[in-house]
Amino acid sequence: MVVLSDAGILKAMENSDIAIENFNVSNLTPNGYDLTIAEILVEGREKQDSGEVVIPPKTWFAVSTLEYVKQGPGIASQLWIRTSWARKGIISSFGMVDAGFEGTLTLSAYNSSSGEVGVPIGDRFAQIVFQVLDTHSEKEYAERSGHYQGQRGVRLE
Image (cartoon, rainbow, N blue to C red; front, side, top):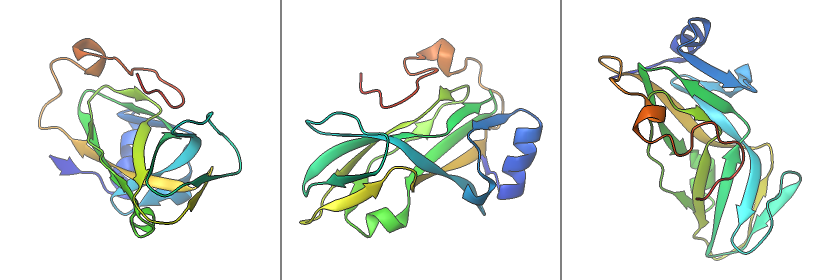
């Protein structure tokens, strides 16, 4: 697989291989795109979509991205937490985003620190790194499972 650079991402968007709703050019990185927080669900609380959310120590939470991402049959991607959050004690386990996926992304995280961490809605939280597959997938995400296809907002089930 080949990782797309910032120029490669822009070209893939021009060719409609990738689409990013709510795209912000300042979120481009040399080899990816920083995804921003639209909504947070903290364990035992209501979803919040504005202001700053205070995450208590040793607490799980989920983040939904502002960006609605569409990937064609030849594009997959990986998700990585931004190191600025990892340095505050926020840990996450992300994976691959399948070829053909479209929707906002729900990202699971945990405040492993012994103190509260403020997480502002609208901050950059994770990086998506797009990869070109060696061939187009035979069946896209929607045909294989598609459980989260078209989702918007935090979705846990």
